[in-house]
Length: 130
Length: 130
DNA sequence: ATCTTCCTACGACAGTGGTAGTAGAGCCGC
DNA sequence: GCGGCTCTACTACCACTGTCGTAGGAAGAT
Image (cartoon, rainbow over all chains, first blue to last red; front, side):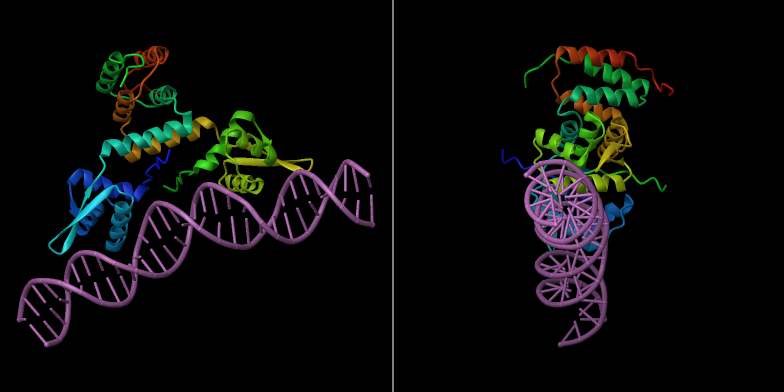
């Protein structure tokens, strides 16, 4: 019950992405990555993000030489999934099927994607146990 | 470019839901609905929500007798869709298929839902025009 | 007329997230 | 040994969101 859902802001998520995509990095390295992706923040801003993320328990740091190196403590998958779940809860009271339906109806897909999705659906078993 | 995405908070969304589900209502009515769904907020809190929602342009109000009646100005669908899109953008850079895949893989569905989804997928045409 | 009740208007406050500045420590080059 | 450069620590600030309180008007109950 005390399961306090980890909330990450948009910018914080961006920082996580660079850690996921490029591995453990120093503040400066993260800063450069962010600039590359068009997020032009100040050095100290990145520090703030990383510190907050560490407080939230989603990254860890070790000192290497003079600077700290930060690394993710949670997987991209888990964050992604929990976000999706939060949205499903919010919008559809936890029922994933209607959300899927809406997504499917309102997006366009390539033929490849469609066959991929078909395969996924074919393989579904009802109430498959974990 | 000036396309300012409408942001609704969790509680604000809850208010919208009562308007969508039960139609135009006064502050008091919304309050009661919220209490029914377990959101125990104060009367003035609901007022604040409705006022803010009106400022955001997603609800409108008319005076009826002594009290204002609030009604939604945007459809549930549109809000829902734009939220989903925001998430897809955030997590998958706008590619819906991977998100679908992840959802499908990590949820369990009833047989009914599965056949419904199957039908949806079957009907998909590649790059189907609007 | 007064009391009670309901409604609105307005202000307030704390928490979070995005953003940054300043101060001070450690090290490098000369 | 001194000036820079880089890094951390700490503080700050604003906007937004969730939450509410108080003040005052209007209108029915007595």
